[in-house]
Length: 195
Image (cartoon, rainbow, N blue to C red):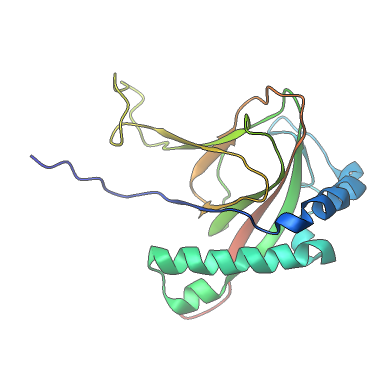
């Protein structure tokens, strides 16, 4: 007997990214945080609806270059062509500030190729969940294993970067701690190239 694992989903994780600049990033976000909103969909303070161009703001340009480097590594390891991997760049970036009671509903990032998150300030209790929306709603396996699990969870750590295809469902659960969680979320698009 053989059980084939098919159609894999991946999450790329890199740690210790721009670690020496975290306080600067936090300070810059706090300076512009009055331009944030909270909506029923985004149950955090977010600049998503008002400022999506943080990748062009000087304090975040170095981070954006680092993210673009990791996007290229991720896509190359995944098996994409050199041209595609080299021309996929951050084209949208915003901040989220979470406090006790905040959360994000499961969602995807339509119209984008690669999405990601960079953690500026967080505590070990904070996690992100990734979901497989194609699992059967009729029955759940009694014992979850590598074949049956419909969720994958990662801890949120300061100076860590996560990258994933934009159609991968993800969410953050209700935040239990009083500590702030400050993140940068972003999308990456394809330059016009011959694929």
